[in-house]
Length: 375
Image (cartoon, rainbow, N blue to C red):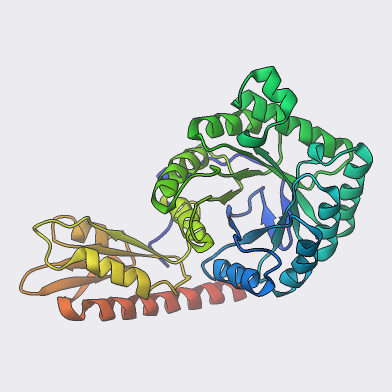
């Protein structure tokens, strides 16, 4: 068994929501919190879009969203869906025909606000297309694109306006007996986003899609998303997440998993626990961790690795990880396996050796999981 498990004092109460399916991926209920991203290619660039979807899926994306702004994109979507290893969400704004076309093209979910696509007849047409093609929907409320009457009523974007918008869209779907939907309440302001989700969670059983929209670049956006999404997840809110960064979609997925791993909510790959380094370090911790992060990217098995520069905290951290290395003296350090001291290793051979030990442990864990599943 891996030492990377959730301990009782780390359990997070999770809001109970209705479960829906996005293709073959369950969202809500007791399903794992899923990680999403969105392509930033031109959708009609079929080859480029497929490559981006596959790259995101390779690092763990459960669901990928693709913008469908015109009819040519709808045609391209059909080809993309055929090649996608994960369910595709079609991002639709305003034009009801794009929603119908996307559902017919094989999209697993439509990101569409029913109140923004025209008459009740058009709404019913989109809902029927979703039903006919086993397609779910996501209501996507965004502080930057609230309805004019709500801005006039509240004077500015605010949590109350966002929630009212969301409930209005929910009512349209529920009045048409369509419950196969999730909903998001996104703003670039962390406080506004958190307040909107908290209010909404008390008024619907729909699954919640979490996100801090337009969060920023890789560093600043990661920090903002970690604060906003981390607090909501800690409160038990959220069934699927998307980290919105001005960066490669692959990075969004990695950050999403890091946020979930930090709260013990979901694990994928190697969780490296490492010190910031200081004058006591017995080896170059920073360069070592950088090298190990790259060398271990292919590991999908949830497990933990501690890389600590000296014996002050090293042995203690190693007790709680699957594999560990603690710096010592004379160019050597100690390798720990399953929390126990195992053997010494020269620092200059340590990286290759740690990779070997992690791969071996991952194989053991995978074999044990397969045996357990067979029983």
